Length: 219
Ligand code: E4P
Image (cartoon, rainbow, N blue to C red; front, top):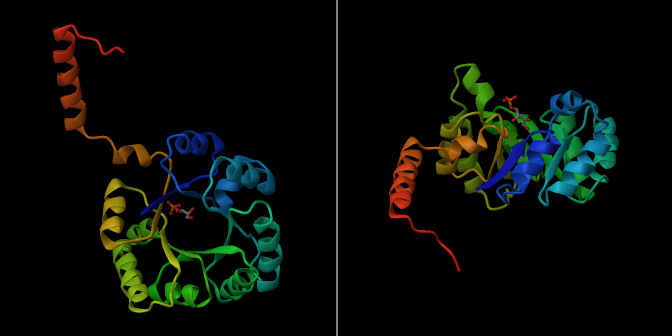
């Protein structure tokens, strides 16, 4: 499973990318607005930090305008994935942009039929939102399982499942068990996948014993 970072915070992205742990980035209009920076400049900088796909979202709602904005964003760097919303107009824009050779991430997916339609429109990625369904007392993980099952039924559906709105370590484990292709995580969730009290306790005991032994490791 590939790991993307869900953020437009360049410092946080740079720090995580330096660990070699991530395969891409997803941004959204809220993150970009919060950064206070012009979108093209911001996306160009993120693309220079990360080799993999960097999603940059259009703000228009008509097909024609989404295609226009998508061409602009998609030309910022070769690793930009143009992000469009999962609407009828967005799917038409997805089809045009993918035909022109751009990667497209169809976002705001909340049903299996929506995901199927995104795949039919040629999306590179479809982004089902796990946490926002959980917020409504609907199990977001069920949606990931449904989409995985549908995509696995048809070899021609090559769209990757990019699990978004992932907020907890348990979400990560469950979508990995289901077989999602990608998970996008807020930067602060990534370290929680590593921490375990028994690891900390065990390390402390090993180091205490080591110190008592008085050895050092040298050439
Ligand atoms: C996806 O691309 C979105 O940026 C994101 O995952 C939304 O997460 P949220 O529901 O926690 O805001």
